[in-house]
Amino acid sequence: DYRQLVVEAILVLILIVDYNVVPYLGGVIKVESIVDAANQIFLEDQRKLNEDTKFCCLEKPGHCGGSGGICVLFYDSAPSGTFGTISYLVRAACRVIDNIPTEGEIDCNIM
Image 1 (cartoon, helix red, strand yellow):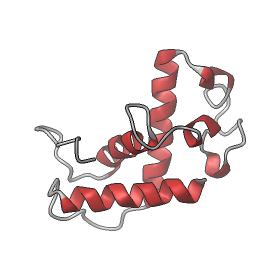
Image 2: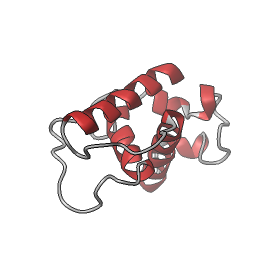
Image 3: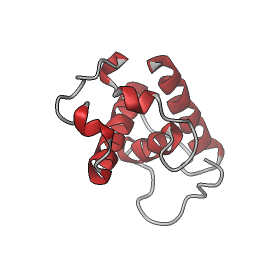
């Protein structure tokens, strides 16, 4: 499960460069930090929606037993869609990578 999220995060990084969001990603990127940030964003969204994670990782991080400290409900999310893992990984990449523009628009139809 964790490995699949890492592969998806790498795909997001490739798309960022392929579609000229930034010409260069910068220095070393710890892909795991993007996966961890995506999980955190997922939990934040679930808290706002008062969803199932209140019985899971929101109370005790890592409590639900997902590998790598990732919420099991995040693993169970579909890759695409508003609440899909790719959406969270794109948002996480924007948080983790310093040189992604904070203003303007990114064509999210591509990603």
